[in-house]
Structures are given as structure tokens and as C-alpha cells.
Amino acid sequence: MVKLKGYFLFVCYLLISVTSYASTLLGGEITWKCVTVGNIQKYKFTVIVFRDCSGCSGCLSATDELKVWNMNGVLSTTRNVGLLNAPSTTNQSIKLTRVLQRDITPTCSFPTTNPFNCATGEKGAIEKHVYETGLIDFFGIAPPSNPNSPIRFTWEQNARNLSNNIYSGSMILISNMYPYYPNGSFLAKSIVNCFDNAPNFSENPTPILYSNSQEFNFNNNAVDIDLDDINYELEDPILNSQYINTRQIPSEIWNSYPVINKLNPFGLSTSQYSFNSKTGEFKFKPLTAGAFNFVTKAVSYKQNQKVSEVFRDFQVLILVPNANQNTNRFPSVYPPFAGGKSNYIEVTAGNTLRIPIVVRDSLAGTGAGLSPQTIDLTVNGIAMGLLNADTTMGCPFPPCAMLSKKKNSFSYNLTDNVKPVPIQN
Image 1 (cartoon, rainbow, N blue to C red):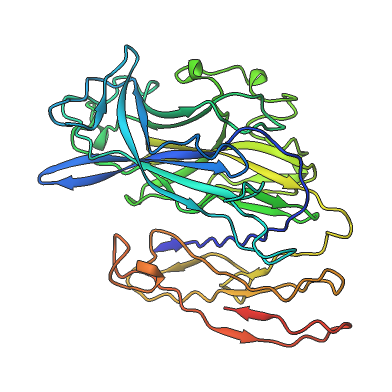
Image 2: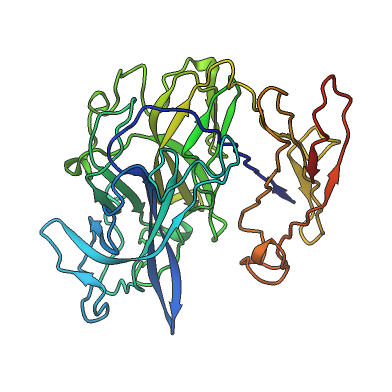
């Protein structure tokens, strides 16, 4: 029997005036995957960086470096020709090349057309930069000899956005590779051939949360192509490179510690937030306007052994509207199973599963000047086929899942003259 679970994230963005914050970088993450070259499994690393469009537009260059710490050996320059920088006394360096620079700001039609404009440096607009290494050969590299000292990959720049909940510092992204002992062996599995793909966050994070006393759900939705178990933890950000291999005192990281800390980065009471370590879902009601950092760690386990960690460091901007702006509401998403009462189902492997996705848009108040809204439904995950429409390509274990959309209009009995709202399901 196989348990299947789906997560769907719907975010609405509205524009109001906000306090200006300096600097540039919102956050990002580092991951890697295995690529077969002949009879060798090489490593390809990806660094994703999210830039605040109101910050410095030229602070991220076309090339950069991925630093490697605690490596048990030295990367071969003859097997990685042109892919490495000269090593330092403490770390080795892999060259990075930017392969994508994209404005991922959501489109919006209120109060003006596309008010979040990255090109003009609007606060709230966000740009995604993706860097990749070449195919790295780990010949001569042994597994970490100490499970408490994993191979650590880092990227850093001194341009972290100022935040209300942490002190100022550098933006340092990290991920970890741990030794793996298969089938009870006392010898760690060789890492010369890549055998484990790191977890990968499949959703872009949310740069702005617009609070109107509604509960927000962050679905951190990491996927592991090896089908390893994933557990989620909340972590401290790293603000200074001297703490890459040692832990900084939390009171030196978090403003107003211990009220604000890694497990409660928004400083809420225990009844106002929750975190699910199995799904990575962080649920809370934003109450205070400001910029807040938080770090989610996706931990991958192979046969109950920790093999990799990917840290997503990110800043959200919370806007608390006044009474006149407090008009919008989330769409209602209905559980697909047990007659709309459950998100869980058990199925027999090999059987076809059809999952009904029912979403209903809410109505804007008559005085808000908002027209009925369009729901944009996106689904991601390891099971989805190419463009969500192919059963044979795009997923590692076909048949792949597909998404079909049908649009219907429904009428409501209303006390005002708001038009019927379209629904997609």
C-alpha cells in the first residue's frame, strides 16, 4: 500500500505602502544531483539566489563560486579541467555560472496593472538567479570520516536584506553531505560515484504576505528523486562566515531572543503558529508588519540514516492592512477524499488514481474596486509528468501524473451586485 499526499499553494498579492529596507538578497538554497557520464556518476550543484528588486541590481554577477568545506581529499584538477578555482587552506572552490535570471514577481491588476515591477525596483518584486557548476568528478574524495563533520557546501555574499527578527550580516547558504553505511556496514559507501540526490525545493518561496487576520500556510514542499524520507526542521541563519563550521550563540542571531528564535521566527504565541516536521508546513497568523527571516532545513534519510541536508534561508515581508484594505480572502480549497473531508488516501500500487481538486474563489467587497479573481492552479512534485500533461515523460517512475483543468461558472445568492465568480477544478 502507498500513501499519497498532495499540497497546493495559492497566494494573493496586494500592494500597499511599506517601509523601505536596504540591501539586496532575500535568500536561497544549494542542492545537487547525480549525472551519469559514461560509467561514472558525477555531481552537478545548483545554487538558487532570490534578489529583492528594490536592492542593488548589479550585485549578483554572471559567475561565482561554491565553497566546499571538510572535504576528505582534494578535487582533481585533471579530472575537473576548468571547473575549479584554486583551493584555500580551509576550503575548496568550484566555479559557478549563472544559467537563469528571471523576474518571478506575480502579476497583479490592482490598484494598477503589474504594480510589482522588478525593472523599476519596486519593493515586493523578486528576481530568481540560478547558478550551476559543471559536472564534478569526486575521484580522490573519501566519505566524511566523522558524521558530525559532514562535507559542507556554501555560497555567500555580504548583501543580506535587513530584517526585524535577526541582526544584520552576510547571506550564507549551506547544504551538507553525510556518510552513508549501507545494510549495517561499518564502512561508509564510496562517494566517488554519486549515489544520492539532495532534496530539491520545488516551489518558489513567498516574498510578501498580506495579513488580514487570515492564517497563512507555508508549504516547503521538498522532493527527493531517490524517494528517500524527508524530515523538516527550523534552523538558525548563518550571518558570519566564521560560523560556517561552528554554531553562533542564538542571542547573537535573533533580535529579542528568546522570544524570537529559530523555532518561532515571528515571535508569536504557541497558539498562533505550528510547524509540521513531516510535511514542512509552517502555519501562522501574521500580526506584526515587517521583514522576517526564517530557515527551513530539509533532511534526507536513506534507510533511516541522514545522508543530506538542504537549508532554505528566506525573508518574508509582512504587510498589515488598515480596515479599508482588509478586503481580500484566500480561495477555499476542499479536501479531495472521503467526501471532501480528508487529504489522505491509501491506494494499491499499479492502480490509476484520480484526485479531484476543487477550489472556490472568494468574493471581494463592493467598495474595494476589485473584479472577480482568476485562480491560477499549479501542481508540482516528483510524480508530475512533463508540463503536467505527459504520462510517459517528466517523472522518474512512469506512468506520470497529469493535471486536467475544467472551468465552470457558478452563481451565488448575494445581497449586492457582484458578478458570479469563476471556479476552476
